[in-house]
Length: 124
Image (cartoon, rainbow, N blue to C red):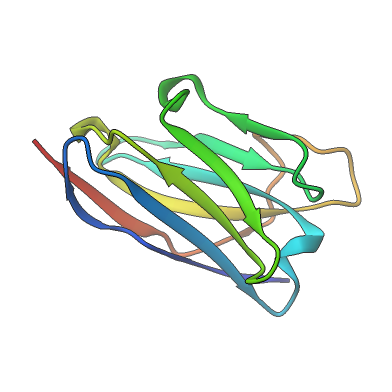
């Protein structure tokens, strides 16, 4: 099973931007569909965005629509989540997850491998 590591989190101010990256060991991330999820303090984990193996199909949840974009960096073999105009309600731990590309791409479900998360704190 591929192991995932997220990076790029930190403390930012309202309106700032961040780029979160997901990298893999034990496999090539380019062979997986990849999703980003977040868990707000005291809440359940929720879907943020995803990208299929080809990079052609991306899905972004409504609450970050227009403020977030997911993409692949095939040179670095990472999947990045660019978040702009951050708000205090975006404060959460962000996780990336990998889904086998052997089955039909499900943007929100069916993820097998998860990273440990990277924390994002947005101050007002």
